[in-house]
Image (cartoon, rainbow, N blue to C red):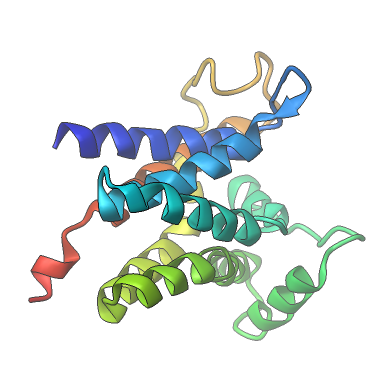
Length: 206
């Protein structure tokens, strides 16, 4: 139990560092956070085994690949409660997500929720595809995948409610308006990620 709590906390910390623009001796810490997240996922599945390192490397790559493109406009819309335009240099994935999500509603808030859930699906599809391929449990991992997709926008709604709560040293000394909500949202989603990976769904579904 103690190990699960520590690893869940590390999931939260890694997700915050991944989202922050921090550097150490000129190197971005976000890359280290993504790599560590892959190993945390492997550990949550295998525990301390020889295969944990091998699977951790692969899962880190799949997780990194899922985070290549952004999701900022949709988080900004949820946090600031106002519509955001896609950036001029938006990649094809953001354009496609924008097109799909805009089919559901004209409400910018519902649209942003739908867009973030679709974006979360792209974030996790390769991770859970590999897990299901290697270890089975299609239903179990499908539930985890769905939970993480749904909770992505919900995390930043929770972060918005915590915007006034100070969070040193995980934000800048003079954060921009709404930046605290982003930080809280990233921490909340990291915590949820840890909980989702440690849920004993295999036993519940038996």
